[in-house]
Image 1 (spheres, rainbow, N blue to C red):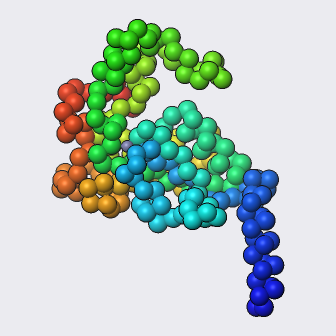
Image 2 (cartoon, rainbow, N blue to C red):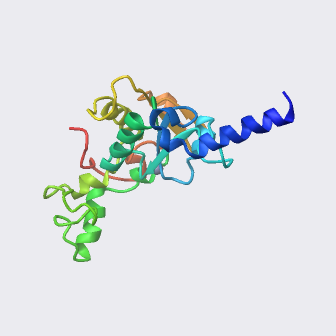
Image 3 (cartoon, rainbow, N blue to C red):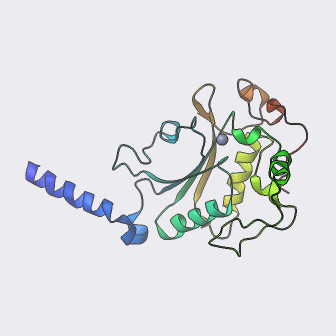
Length: 216
Ligand SMILES: [Zn+2]
């Protein structure tokens, strides 16, 4: 291939890349992939999954959504719904991690933090641009989404996406745990030996009793 031919291909490819979202499913990201990950700075998504989400510039392997815990929220569902139905995404990968801040406190104590400051947690506008989005009374602590066990949460998160009516049934979905202590990825498990070197439960953070659960 001559340099001229290479440059033509390169500029055409780049042109298509930069205008991707105009092409719907034909303008999918490189791996037809949506990643849901915890926002934690100790979870390096690219390294954990061996992909290039947004670096180096021009990578573009996946759409990536990060929130506290890497859990199901209405906005995670909204984003997955868009990419899976309209932007060509065929696979969802969920990454949560050991030592997660979402294990580190009791959600009821976090709610109390606001109540003590005079905030009425039963009357919160969650999204000022969407006042229709409301929590029932008493649901605030549950909404925070603290975890008892990150492996259990990861497995339940996979299930929730698998069963959601807005996610196409043929979407490939998997969940993974990044071990902050060993810098390795593993499948979620309840096997005590496999979890031995890591902190994966709220009990290990000194949290007593169960979190208000999202999984009933
Ligand atoms: Zn986390």
